[in-house]
Amino acid sequence: MTDKYSHRERIDMILNGVTPEDRSAGSLWRHFFHREWIPDQFVAAMIAFQKEYDWDFMKINPRAGYHVQDWGNEIAWSHDEFKSHVKTKFAVQNHEEWEKIEPLNNTAPVLREHLLSINRIRKEVGPDLHLFMTVFSPLSVARYLIGHENPLMEHLRDIPEKVLPALENITLTYEKYVEDIINAGADGIFFATTKFASADVMTWEEYRQFGIPYDLRILNRVKERTNILHVCASNNYLKELADYPVKLVNWDSSDPTNAPLDKATPFLKGKTIIGGIDHTGWLKRGTPEGVRTEMDKIRVRMKGESFIFGPGCAVDPDIPAPNIRAARASL
Image (cartoon, rainbow, N blue to C red; front, side, top):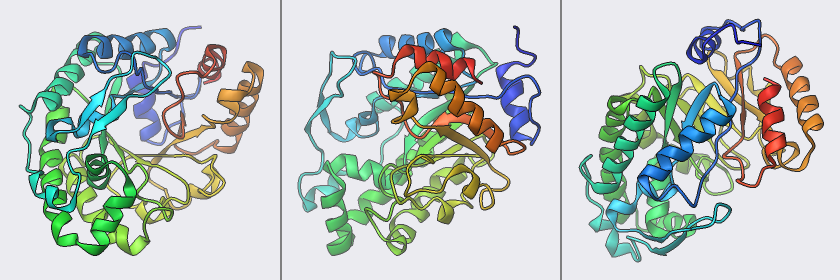
């Protein structure tokens, strides 16, 4: 059966509070570890996944390390579709090395590589598909520069005067870069807080101090665009971030420590929710029939809400293909 609406029309209808009468909307996204470190292969993988499943939008899912390679992080690349890359060197190895983190511009090789990839993807998929490019929050970028959230939090608490200039330069870099992302052909950004907007890592007062001011500077650069806020991790601060200037919000609503879909709708009024698909539970470990059943339940629960099906995070590469096909067929 031919869809009544184009992908762009369908997403725009939902953003405007109109429920398409023919079917719901949705998308999944994943890493292609063995292909994402070669620009041609990365572009080909994104396009092939879209062509195979015909999602309603594309979350461009680059290697996480792209955010920090131009500052000196080094990676041993994976040749295995199911195994991530190995980080072999971090740009910041002690508190004195934060001073090395200076602002970058879009001519930095890896940042430029990804702008070119966005442009190529846009040309391949045409104008009908919403494209969202992944951008990590400044705290998340800082974490990748030093390798783990624990030493970053120690430095922020004990020697903030060493870290904050680097956090400022990271923010300056991505304030400009998100504008370049739009100019390259993306509709907006997929802004990920990774582990940091979570009580498991930092207090709310700490996130207010070290997270929010820098997050908002980046989001405000592209606030007129269609952007997604992705609040990662367990015990997250989704409710506290509900007023961020974005049109769509995504989180793992299947995690029992986070707000379920229907509990979040009251404080996310005015925003479109992307979620519902339990990417580590029934999507990964269930059957195609089970996937269809669960999605039907969610559709009933979210009737009348501004809602798009999506996972709580990137789906694992080993998700059974029949389950992915069942999810697409159940939209």
